[in-house]
Length: 154
Image (cartoon, rainbow, N blue to C red; front, side, top):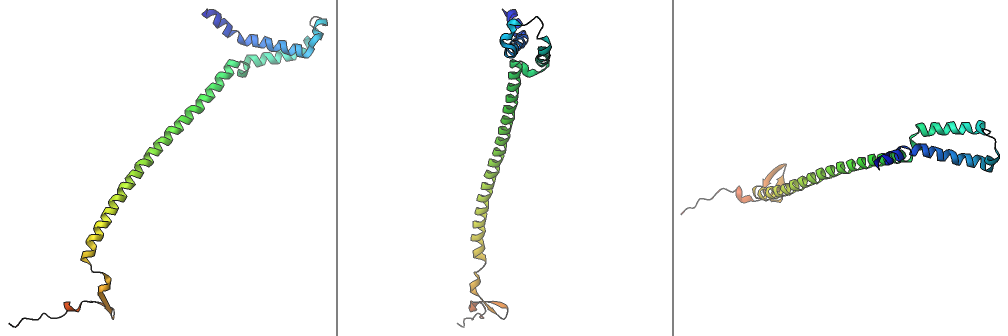
């Protein structure tokens, strides 16, 4: 059974050639075949015969199975390229997600540090509206700091 399959598989190109030649001959000459002399159409049809022999001998598109294999190979290559692009895109998305998470953590730490700095910075420096600017010098508004301390006389 396997030998019959190999013979039928290997003989598909010659039989396709013969079927093509038969169809071309009938299309070209039609019913004139029945009244033709032997080898009478050889001069006219020999050119078509040689062209088709060359086509079926060398062109990979002549064999339908080989043509389909070639198309399947092209489709496979395109699919492999697309899968590679999707995987590459997934890797870039993972990197982007990692960077976003890192930035979010940095933002949280920055916010925490700024709150801490603001809370500690306000107690050390009095607000600017507690100063009086006079002749280019900044004097504290609270005049009690410059008053001499009074000694108690008791």
